[in-house]
Image (cartoon, rainbow, N blue to C red; front, side, top):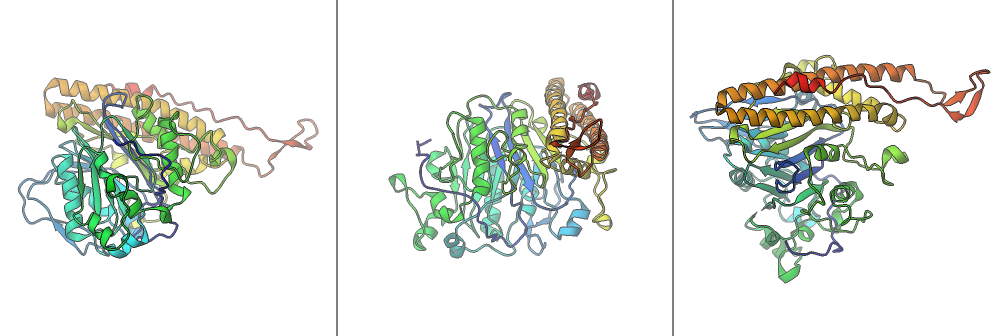
Length: 533
């Protein structure tokens, strides 16, 4: 890659004035880890799906359809425009909204993250923002492609990552886009990053296997020539040049970042999240936050990055910095690990396994900050009963923690996230989930490798399904116990009188009451015995 100055005056952050015609996921964060710099040689794609709402989601498996012509899927949220499907489509996992959520928001189901039987995984719904000139020159299309329709529409018909990218871009060519967005797509061989700027302009680049990416709601792609392979919309440069907003850099190459985004869209809201990712994964290269610094799309981490590292990054709340809302009490900071996350996903792709066993989506149904990631393999024949339940449209507005994982994790996070709660309740809960996830990650790898070694794909699917279902059920049950314990302990300690009292006279003293952190009595080793891979 070219050595671009990180002091270049380019800020790529989303505008405070929301210009999208549909409800986008407006506070999402994306992460990529190439297989050569991951701890176990897998490729990792991660994305949070953030929005201030109570929209529950669940996990589904859509079966393969063989040789059935004439089918279509919606392109726009209102389902007024439809794209044809090939006669055969692939089996895939996804995490759409429940019927109760779509009854509330009136939008498409939003598959959010998909992984198919060919080992192709895709995430989208990372809203970004283009400048006014770019949007005026090629306006967004009212009934064009959206983040809520694109992911399963692309993955169901793509045998590899390159085909998925070409399918996505072909849909934009044919129908236009109704949103400014970012997508990531990967398979066992390669990973791609796609920026969608306005009605019909886009840029897609093949990501290096020896780099990582972390970005908030902002574009980061500067020069296409920095990458091994790139696909650009035919009018990407000519549209900008003819309308007077093209910006050129080294060697008179189009600076895509400055051309389609630039300073007018800059805020701290997204750029801080981009910075913290760079700072965590390459601390000696990135110092104090600078709004005017270009944090490159791809950079080299200073050590191997594990699945657990990515899970913790998706929970990051700027701990140990002046921007931590928990430690400073600031209320103006957008963190990565937010309580407004509708769901958070990590797609992990194993390059050495058979394609139909190669991908595991680690799914946090609800906010991940005090929730847990559970495995959903692309080979799974089924999903556990709790995670596969869809609340009906008639139950819209009913907050049901008894039946649905989303509501358990949403309330657990709500109770733990405030400044006066995160140390007492949140940190013990988060520590427990971290132990459980480490055991699940090891167990999932062993289950996959043992199943693949058997040479019997049908038996392998049975084994992998049994393991993943056991993990999902264990997590759901543990979340119920943790929620009960936090409710109990928080209610027991509820008192608007924050000051302590003299134990002998009961007179109020100057010191605040000290409440000991919650003791979690659950045993994470249960995840080792429950799966028994």
